[in-house]
Length: 96
Image (cartoon, rainbow, N blue to C red):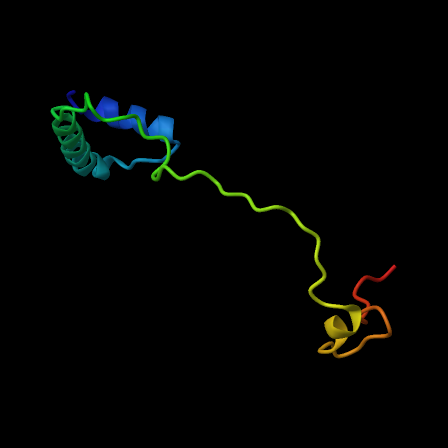
């Protein structure tokens, strides 16, 4: 594929980016290098390669969702600055 000014502007429009006139020369070079690299990848024999959806073949391993109590109320309130028997006490921050 031949990269020219028109192609650069079309790609920039699709990507919703602004390209300045002085950047065009460098972008033509860079995009040509990228496409040359992609053409080299097309030379690889991938007939025996399975399509890759995930990077590893493992699937999610889900554990049973079991309710358990790790802290009781008094242990949970032990390190709070202010509290009553059951709740944390915090300063009021919303005014009417």
